[in-house]
Length: 86
Image (cartoon, rainbow, N blue to C red; front, side, top):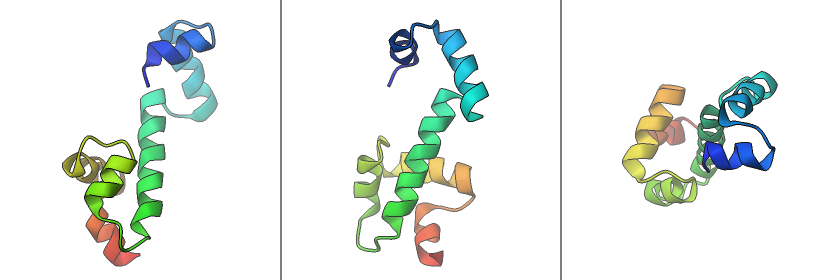
């Protein structure tokens, strides 16, 4: 999803779209998308049999390493640690 595409759909410049989006949702468009990906990954991690590489692909991460880095940055634990504690 490109910021320019979203902005053009609603008839705003990318700058104004980002500003209004952050006011409405409290996050930048990019941060919102990352948050949604992490939430989906968390839900999938509760299904104990799903491999991490499948979760990464299904949630839109480029690979399992990208999922691990992003998940740890957001939650302070790796997906595997989250799964063990769930």
